[in-house]
Image (tube, rainbow, N blue to C red; front, side, top):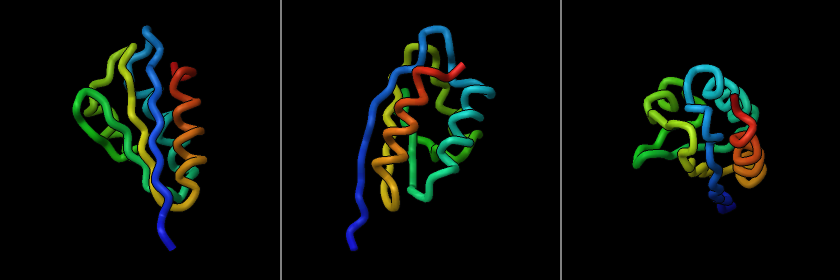
Length: 89
């Protein structure tokens, strides 16, 4: 059975860098899904379920994030996480 792959883009609110609290919220949301999920910003890619990798992206407010998911419930995960990004902070 082929795994589904999907990608969504979302922009961080201007005043919200992807620091500990918003990154933690994002990781907790990603962990609810069985899909493999990554997040990319500033030419770097991170495992969306790893707070340390997400913090290493150094994403500042207003940065566009690319959320990619594959596997079980991938589209649902990407949609949910992309919808969460504008509300982080």
